[in-house]
Image 1 (tube, rainbow, N blue to C red):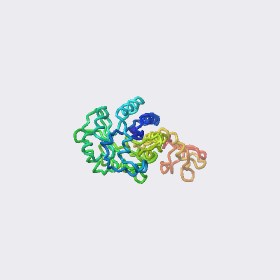
Image 2: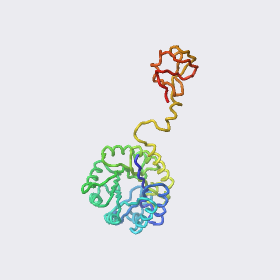
Image 3: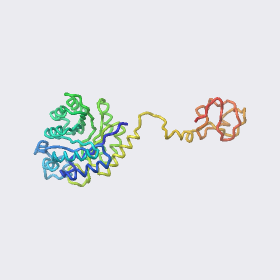
Image 4: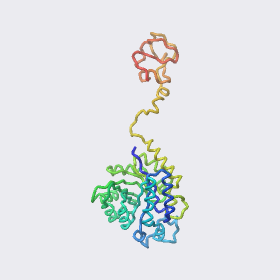
Length: 343
C-alpha cells in the first residue's frame, strides 16, 4: 500500500501564540506525522461583522463576541508563520498553510508554497478557486476538502481548478461538524468518491473523535489523512475540543501505519509466516488401524488426521480401493507410489 500522508492540523489552535505553535510543531513531530498545517488569514477579509458563529463555536467560546472578534485573536502574523515554517522544516516536517483570503494566497504564493489546501467553506468560492488554480509552482498539489458538498459541487470545483492547467488534486472526504457525530462520519462515502472521481486520489479530513475513523478509511485505499491537533482540549478556542491530543494523535499515526501493513497487496496468497503451519493444521490420509501389505484401502482402515505432510485428503476417493504397498501401523501416514506426500 502507498504511504499515507498524515497531517497534523494545527490550524488556529495555537491561539495566536507563537511559542505555543512552536511547541505544537515539536510535539507533532514526536507523534510521527508527515506534515503540520496552519491557517493564514486576515480576519477583516475573511469574515463580515454580521457573520454569526457556528453552534460548535458558540459552545466552545460563548456567544458574547462575534465570529469576527473571535477570529481576530487567532491570527498568526506572516513573519511568525515564516519562523514556524523554517522550524518545522528543520525537524524534517512538511509544512503548509490554508489561505482564507486573496491577501493570504498572495503571501503564501510568494513564500513558495506548493501544497494548497482548499477548506470546505471555499468549495463554492469561484474567484478563490480560480486564483488557486492559476498559481504556477513546481510540484503543485491541491488538496480539496468536501465537507457540506454534493458530488455536483465537487465536480464543478474540480472543473474550475483544472480550467487553466492540469493540477494534481487530492479530494478529501470530510464532514464539517466539530466533532463529527459517529452517525455522520460516513466512511463509506470514500468509495463513492473513488467511483465518481476515478482520476483523483482520495483522502480523509477527520473531524471525528478518536482514531477509528482514520483506521477504517485506510481500508478504502486513501493516500492522505488530516487531523486537528491540540495540546489541551480545555484551551479556549473554537477547535480544541474536536482536536486530537498528543497521545491521541500518536495513537492515530501508529494505528494508521499498522493498518497500511495490514491492508496488504489486494491479492490472496499463502504468506511466508503461515507456510510452516500447513503440516500442523492440515490433515493427511492415515492408517485407522494396522494395515497389512496387499490389503484394500477402505473407510474401515483409513482416516483423515493431522499432520498434513502426508497424502492430502483431497485424494480420498482416488486412494480408496487401491492396495496397500506397505505394512502400516495405526496412525501412520499412508504412503503410495500413486500419490505424492505433501512437503
